[in-house]
Amino acid sequence: MSNQTKQHTWQQIITQWQDSDLSAAAFCRNQSVNYEQFYYWKKKLSTHASQGDKKTSLQLSSGFTRVTQVEHHAQTNDLSLNLPSGISISGLQSNNIHLLGDILRQL
Image 1 (cartoon, rainbow, N blue to C red):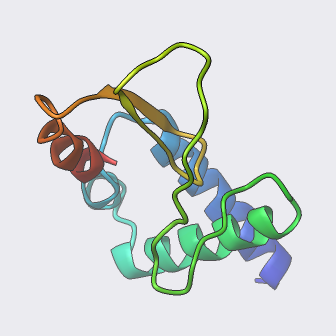
Image 2 (image 1 turned 180 degrees about the vertical axis):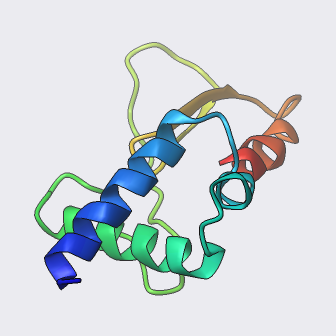
């Protein structure tokens, strides 16, 4: 199987996962997909896609994403988090920040 065919196959698998409501581990178990290979291709395809997109957040080699403060016209104390995958989490405040860990574990 050529690298281009593998890349296309894994892109389809990752798209199916994104369309599901499952965690990556649960999806891999249900689809009999090797989790380590899934993670490798997810990262590889994500990195490959972000190299062509200048607007994508910078993903550092440590796996962390650079966080920047965005100025809003309306005064608010809400926290917003934009992930490289395009997912945006907003409305977090000091009284519900504990939910962020629960949300991120589901991704």
